[in-house]
Picture 1 (cartoon, one colour):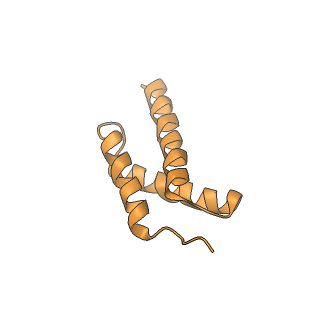
Picture 2 (tube, rainbow, N blue to C red):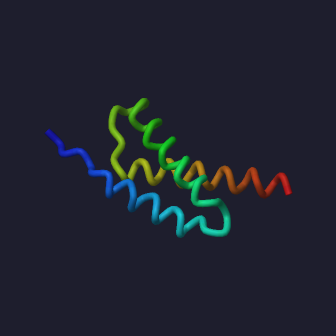
Length: 72
């Protein structure tokens, strides 16, 4: 059986994305996107590897940035 990633892996994902999107999104938004990505991955695929969660959350954050830019 595959070993499940520990919580530190998701903390690392969150940290990477907070740095990447600093000045674009508040830290709380990044946290919510990571949590939503984790939940969505579990619902759709049945697993939530950190790399998958990171890719999904990054896409969410990119879309939010585009939407915010269009509303200015």
